[in-house]
Image (cartoon, rainbow, N blue to C red):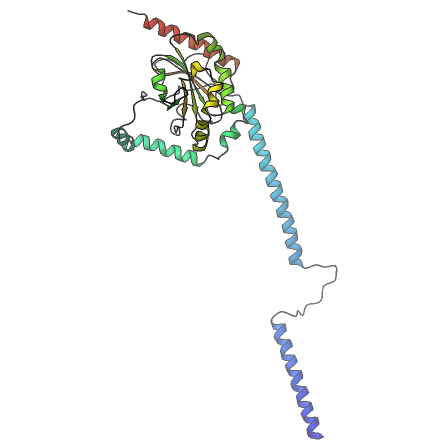
Length: 321
Protein backbone atom coordinates (compact mmCIF):
# COMPACT_ATOMS: atom_id res chain seq x y z
CA UNK A 1 0.00 0.00 0.00
CA UNK A 2 2.80 2.40 0.87
CA UNK A 3 4.44 1.66 -2.49
CA UNK A 4 1.17 2.29 -4.36
CA UNK A 5 0.46 5.54 -2.55
CA UNK A 6 4.00 6.74 -3.26
CA UNK A 7 3.60 5.90 -6.93
CA UNK A 8 0.27 7.67 -7.12
CA UNK A 9 1.72 10.70 -5.36
CA UNK A 10 4.68 10.92 -7.71
CA UNK A 11 2.38 10.59 -10.72
CA UNK A 12 0.14 13.35 -9.38
CA UNK A 13 3.13 15.58 -8.73
CA UNK A 14 4.44 15.01 -12.26
CA UNK A 15 1.02 15.89 -13.61
CA UNK A 16 0.97 19.17 -11.65
CA UNK A 17 4.46 20.10 -12.84
CA UNK A 18 3.46 19.38 -16.45
CA UNK A 19 0.38 21.59 -16.22
CA UNK A 20 2.43 24.34 -14.60
CA UNK A 21 5.00 24.16 -17.43
CA UNK A 22 2.24 24.36 -20.05
CA UNK A 23 0.71 27.36 -18.28
CA UNK A 24 4.06 29.17 -18.17
CA UNK A 25 4.66 28.47 -21.86
CA UNK A 26 1.23 29.76 -22.85
CA UNK A 27 1.62 32.84 -20.67
CA UNK A 28 5.04 33.51 -22.21
CA UNK A 29 3.55 33.51 -25.70
CA UNK A 30 1.00 36.09 -24.69
CA UNK A 31 -2.07 33.95 -25.14
CA UNK A 32 -3.07 34.54 -21.53
CA UNK A 33 -2.77 38.08 -20.20
CA UNK A 34 -2.02 38.79 -16.59
CA UNK A 35 -3.63 42.23 -16.90
CA UNK A 36 -6.92 42.94 -15.22
CA UNK A 37 -10.06 42.21 -17.21
CA UNK A 38 -11.84 45.06 -18.95
CA UNK A 39 -15.36 46.02 -18.18
CA UNK A 40 -18.04 44.95 -20.66
CA UNK A 41 -18.54 48.57 -21.77
CA UNK A 42 -14.94 48.95 -22.87
CA UNK A 43 -14.05 47.87 -26.38
CA UNK A 44 -10.78 46.84 -27.86
CA UNK A 45 -8.77 50.02 -28.40
CA UNK A 46 -7.27 48.81 -31.67
CA UNK A 47 -10.65 47.97 -33.19
CA UNK A 48 -12.22 51.23 -32.04
CA UNK A 49 -9.35 53.24 -33.41
CA UNK A 50 -9.48 51.36 -36.71
CA UNK A 51 -13.22 51.95 -37.04
CA UNK A 52 -12.78 55.62 -36.19
CA UNK A 53 -9.97 56.00 -38.69
CA UNK A 54 -12.01 54.20 -41.33
CA UNK A 55 -14.94 56.58 -40.85
CA UNK A 56 -12.68 59.61 -40.87
CA UNK A 57 -10.87 58.47 -44.02
CA UNK A 58 -14.19 57.77 -45.74
CA UNK A 59 -15.48 61.22 -44.80
CA UNK A 60 -12.31 62.89 -46.00
CA UNK A 61 -12.43 60.94 -49.28
CA UNK A 62 -16.05 62.00 -49.83
CA UNK A 63 -15.20 65.60 -49.03
CA UNK A 64 -12.25 65.53 -51.45
CA UNK A 65 -14.46 64.00 -54.13
CA UNK A 66 -17.10 66.70 -53.65
CA UNK A 67 -14.45 69.40 -53.74
CA UNK A 68 -13.03 67.96 -56.98
CA UNK A 69 -16.47 67.75 -58.60
CA UNK A 70 -17.20 71.30 -57.49
CA UNK A 71 -13.92 72.53 -58.95
CA UNK A 72 -14.63 70.80 -62.28
CA UNK A 73 -18.12 72.29 -62.41
CA UNK A 74 -16.74 75.75 -61.66
CA UNK A 75 -14.12 75.27 -64.40
CA UNK A 76 -16.75 74.21 -66.95
CA UNK A 77 -19.02 77.08 -65.91
CA UNK A 78 -16.20 79.60 -66.31
CA UNK A 79 -15.36 78.22 -69.75
CA UNK A 80 -19.03 78.40 -70.75
CA UNK A 81 -19.34 81.96 -69.46
CA UNK A 82 -16.10 83.14 -71.04
CA UNK A 83 -16.64 84.62 -74.51
CA UNK A 84 -15.36 82.81 -77.59
CA UNK A 85 -12.28 84.67 -78.91
CA UNK A 86 -11.89 86.00 -82.43
CA UNK A 87 -9.62 84.16 -84.85
CA UNK A 88 -6.16 85.44 -83.98
CA UNK A 89 -3.98 84.07 -86.80
CA UNK A 90 -4.01 83.14 -90.49
CA UNK A 91 -4.96 79.52 -91.07
CA UNK A 92 -3.20 77.21 -93.50
CA UNK A 93 0.21 75.85 -94.42
CA UNK A 94 3.22 77.61 -95.92
CA UNK A 95 3.86 75.12 -98.73
CA UNK A 96 1.88 75.56 -101.93
CA UNK A 97 -0.47 72.55 -102.31
CA UNK A 98 -0.29 70.16 -105.23
CA UNK A 99 -2.47 67.31 -106.44
CA UNK A 100 0.58 65.31 -107.55
CA UNK A 101 1.57 62.28 -105.48
CA UNK A 102 4.70 62.58 -103.39
CA UNK A 103 7.86 61.12 -104.87
CA UNK A 104 10.40 59.07 -102.93
CA UNK A 105 12.63 62.14 -102.87
CA UNK A 106 9.87 64.18 -101.22
CA UNK A 107 9.27 61.47 -98.63
CA UNK A 108 13.00 61.23 -97.94
CA UNK A 109 13.25 64.99 -97.49
CA UNK A 110 10.36 64.96 -95.02
CA UNK A 111 11.97 62.17 -93.00
CA UNK A 112 15.29 63.99 -92.86
CA UNK A 113 13.76 67.40 -92.11
CA UNK A 114 14.57 68.14 -88.48
CA UNK A 115 11.83 70.76 -88.02
CA UNK A 116 9.11 68.47 -89.35
CA UNK A 117 10.26 65.68 -87.07
CA UNK A 118 10.03 68.05 -84.09
CA UNK A 119 6.52 69.05 -85.15
CA UNK A 120 5.47 65.41 -85.31
CA UNK A 121 6.92 64.78 -81.86
CA UNK A 122 5.01 67.73 -80.43
CA UNK A 123 1.84 66.42 -82.02
CA UNK A 124 2.34 62.93 -80.59
CA UNK A 125 2.98 64.34 -77.11
CA UNK A 126 -0.16 66.46 -77.35
CA UNK A 127 -2.30 63.57 -78.58
CA UNK A 128 -1.03 61.34 -75.77
CA UNK A 129 -2.61 63.69 -73.24
CA UNK A 130 -5.98 63.88 -75.02
CA UNK A 131 -8.86 61.68 -73.97
CA UNK A 132 -11.00 59.68 -76.38
CA UNK A 133 -14.05 61.87 -75.73
CA UNK A 134 -12.20 65.21 -75.66
CA UNK A 135 -13.82 66.53 -78.85
CA UNK A 136 -17.26 65.32 -77.81
CA UNK A 137 -16.99 66.96 -74.40
CA UNK A 138 -15.77 70.16 -76.03
CA UNK A 139 -19.09 70.47 -77.86
CA UNK A 140 -20.71 71.17 -74.48
CA UNK A 141 -18.94 74.54 -74.45
CA UNK A 142 -20.34 76.93 -77.06
CA UNK A 143 -21.32 73.99 -79.28
CA UNK A 144 -17.67 73.19 -79.99
CA UNK A 145 -16.96 76.69 -81.29
CA UNK A 146 -13.36 77.63 -80.47
CA UNK A 147 -13.10 80.94 -82.34
CA UNK A 148 -15.26 83.51 -84.09
CA UNK A 149 -14.69 84.22 -87.76
CA UNK A 150 -13.37 87.70 -88.65
CA UNK A 151 -15.64 90.28 -90.24
CA UNK A 152 -13.04 91.04 -92.90
CA UNK A 153 -10.71 88.92 -95.02
CA UNK A 154 -7.21 87.89 -94.08
CA UNK A 155 -4.69 90.08 -95.86
CA UNK A 156 -3.29 88.68 -99.10
CA UNK A 157 0.33 89.01 -97.98
CA UNK A 158 -0.44 87.18 -94.70
CA UNK A 159 -2.68 84.44 -96.05
CA UNK A 160 -1.49 80.80 -96.03
CA UNK A 161 -2.38 77.90 -98.32
CA UNK A 162 -5.13 75.36 -97.82
CA UNK A 163 -3.60 71.83 -97.88
CA UNK A 164 -4.55 69.37 -100.58
CA UNK A 165 -7.24 66.88 -99.55
CA UNK A 166 -7.66 63.85 -101.80
CA UNK A 167 -10.56 61.47 -102.21
CA UNK A 168 -13.21 60.41 -104.72
CA UNK A 169 -16.04 62.54 -106.06
CA UNK A 170 -19.70 61.76 -105.62
CA UNK A 171 -20.48 61.78 -109.34
CA UNK A 172 -18.35 58.93 -110.70
CA UNK A 173 -16.10 57.94 -107.76
CA UNK A 174 -13.16 59.31 -109.72
CA UNK A 175 -10.08 60.65 -107.96
CA UNK A 176 -10.55 64.22 -106.80
CA UNK A 177 -8.36 66.83 -105.10
CA UNK A 178 -9.32 70.09 -103.48
CA UNK A 179 -6.34 71.76 -105.15
CA UNK A 180 -7.47 70.79 -108.66
CA UNK A 181 -11.00 72.00 -107.94
CA UNK A 182 -10.07 75.29 -106.30
CA UNK A 183 -7.17 76.64 -108.36
CA UNK A 184 -8.38 79.49 -110.56
CA UNK A 185 -11.69 79.78 -108.69
CA UNK A 186 -12.99 81.63 -105.65
CA UNK A 187 -14.02 78.65 -103.54
CA UNK A 188 -15.94 77.94 -100.37
CA UNK A 189 -14.63 74.67 -98.92
CA UNK A 190 -16.63 72.91 -96.20
CA UNK A 191 -15.23 70.05 -94.10
CA UNK A 192 -17.97 67.65 -92.99
CA UNK A 193 -17.62 64.74 -90.60
CA UNK A 194 -21.05 64.30 -88.96
CA UNK A 195 -24.72 65.10 -89.39
CA UNK A 196 -24.30 68.10 -87.09
CA UNK A 197 -21.54 69.49 -89.30
CA UNK A 198 -23.78 69.13 -92.37
CA UNK A 199 -26.49 71.25 -90.75
CA UNK A 200 -23.94 73.83 -89.61
CA UNK A 201 -22.49 74.06 -93.11
CA UNK A 202 -25.92 74.53 -94.65
CA UNK A 203 -26.58 77.46 -92.32
CA UNK A 204 -23.18 78.96 -93.09
CA UNK A 205 -23.33 78.90 -96.88
CA UNK A 206 -27.01 79.33 -97.77
CA UNK A 207 -26.98 83.13 -98.37
CA UNK A 208 -23.65 82.86 -100.19
CA UNK A 209 -24.90 80.11 -102.50
CA UNK A 210 -28.16 81.95 -103.13
CA UNK A 211 -26.20 84.93 -104.43
CA UNK A 212 -23.12 83.43 -106.10
CA UNK A 213 -23.89 79.80 -107.00
CA UNK A 214 -24.24 80.67 -110.70
CA UNK A 215 -21.16 82.89 -110.86
CA UNK A 216 -18.66 81.40 -113.37
CA UNK A 217 -15.68 82.02 -111.07
CA UNK A 218 -17.31 80.58 -107.93
CA UNK A 219 -17.06 76.99 -106.68
CA UNK A 220 -18.56 75.24 -103.66
CA UNK A 221 -16.51 72.23 -102.50
CA UNK A 222 -17.65 69.83 -99.79
CA UNK A 223 -15.29 67.31 -98.21
CA UNK A 224 -16.89 64.41 -96.35
CA UNK A 225 -13.88 63.57 -94.19
CA UNK A 226 -13.96 60.22 -92.37
CA UNK A 227 -10.57 59.38 -90.89
CA UNK A 228 -11.97 56.43 -88.97
CA UNK A 229 -11.72 53.28 -91.11
CA UNK A 230 -15.09 51.87 -90.04
CA UNK A 231 -16.91 55.15 -90.67
CA UNK A 232 -15.18 55.48 -94.01
CA UNK A 233 -16.43 52.03 -95.06
CA UNK A 234 -19.97 52.85 -93.95
CA UNK A 235 -19.97 56.11 -95.91
CA UNK A 236 -18.70 54.34 -99.04
CA UNK A 237 -21.54 51.81 -98.70
CA UNK A 238 -24.22 54.52 -98.59
CA UNK A 239 -23.06 56.76 -101.44
CA UNK A 240 -26.42 56.39 -103.17
CA UNK A 241 -28.11 57.76 -100.06
CA UNK A 242 -25.76 60.75 -100.03
CA UNK A 243 -26.58 61.49 -103.67
CA UNK A 244 -30.24 61.85 -102.72
CA UNK A 245 -29.43 64.60 -100.22
CA UNK A 246 -26.96 66.56 -102.40
CA UNK A 247 -28.09 68.53 -105.48
CA UNK A 248 -26.71 66.96 -108.64
CA UNK A 249 -24.88 70.15 -109.60
CA UNK A 250 -22.59 69.63 -106.59
CA UNK A 251 -21.81 65.92 -107.10
CA UNK A 252 -18.61 66.66 -108.99
CA UNK A 253 -17.29 68.93 -106.21
CA UNK A 254 -18.37 66.67 -103.33
CA UNK A 255 -15.30 64.69 -102.17
CA UNK A 256 -15.45 61.60 -99.97
CA UNK A 257 -12.09 61.31 -98.25
CA UNK A 258 -10.41 59.14 -95.62
CA UNK A 259 -7.17 61.13 -95.65
CA UNK A 260 -5.42 61.47 -92.29
CA UNK A 261 -5.28 65.10 -91.19
CA UNK A 262 -3.43 64.55 -87.92
CA UNK A 263 -0.50 66.82 -88.69
CA UNK A 264 -2.62 69.47 -90.43
CA UNK A 265 -5.47 70.01 -87.98
CA UNK A 266 -3.68 72.58 -85.88
CA UNK A 267 -2.52 74.49 -88.96
CA UNK A 268 -6.00 74.93 -90.36
CA UNK A 269 -7.70 75.35 -86.97
CA UNK A 270 -9.69 72.12 -87.30
CA UNK A 271 -9.36 71.01 -83.68
CA UNK A 272 -12.77 69.35 -83.20
CA UNK A 273 -13.79 66.33 -85.27
CA UNK A 274 -17.53 66.76 -84.71
CA UNK A 275 -18.23 70.29 -85.99
CA UNK A 276 -18.13 71.97 -89.39
CA UNK A 277 -15.29 74.09 -90.74
CA UNK A 278 -15.84 76.47 -93.65
CA UNK A 279 -12.99 78.14 -95.55
CA UNK A 280 -13.03 80.83 -98.21
CA UNK A 281 -10.16 80.38 -100.67
CA UNK A 282 -8.92 82.72 -103.35
CA UNK A 283 -7.86 81.60 -106.83
CA UNK A 284 -4.44 80.52 -105.49
CA UNK A 285 -5.91 78.28 -102.74
CA UNK A 286 -5.01 80.72 -99.98
CA UNK A 287 -7.30 80.84 -96.94
CA UNK A 288 -8.80 84.34 -96.84
CA UNK A 289 -11.57 83.66 -94.30
CA UNK A 290 -12.70 80.79 -92.06
CA UNK A 291 -15.55 79.88 -89.72
CA UNK A 292 -16.43 76.92 -87.52
CA UNK A 293 -19.30 75.18 -85.68
CA UNK A 294 -22.69 76.91 -85.31
CA UNK A 295 -22.57 80.11 -87.35
CA UNK A 296 -23.47 83.49 -85.91
CA UNK A 297 -25.46 85.95 -87.99
CA UNK A 298 -22.42 88.18 -88.37
CA UNK A 299 -20.34 85.22 -89.61
CA UNK A 300 -22.92 84.24 -92.22
CA UNK A 301 -22.98 87.81 -93.50
CA UNK A 302 -19.18 88.07 -93.41
CA UNK A 303 -18.82 84.97 -95.61
CA UNK A 304 -21.26 86.38 -98.15
CA UNK A 305 -19.61 89.80 -98.24
CA UNK A 306 -16.04 88.47 -98.40
CA UNK A 307 -16.97 86.08 -101.21
CA UNK A 308 -18.42 88.96 -103.20
CA UNK A 309 -15.29 91.07 -102.67
CA UNK A 310 -13.00 88.26 -103.84
CA UNK A 311 -15.12 87.59 -106.92
CA UNK A 312 -15.02 91.27 -107.88
CA UNK A 313 -11.26 91.43 -107.47
CA UNK A 314 -10.68 88.21 -109.40
CA UNK A 315 -13.00 89.26 -112.23
CA UNK A 316 -11.29 92.65 -112.45
CA UNK A 317 -7.84 91.05 -112.55
CA UNK A 318 -8.95 88.54 -115.21
CA UNK A 319 -10.35 91.26 -117.47
CA UNK A 320 -7.15 93.26 -117.47
CA UNK A 321 -5.32 93.15 -120.85
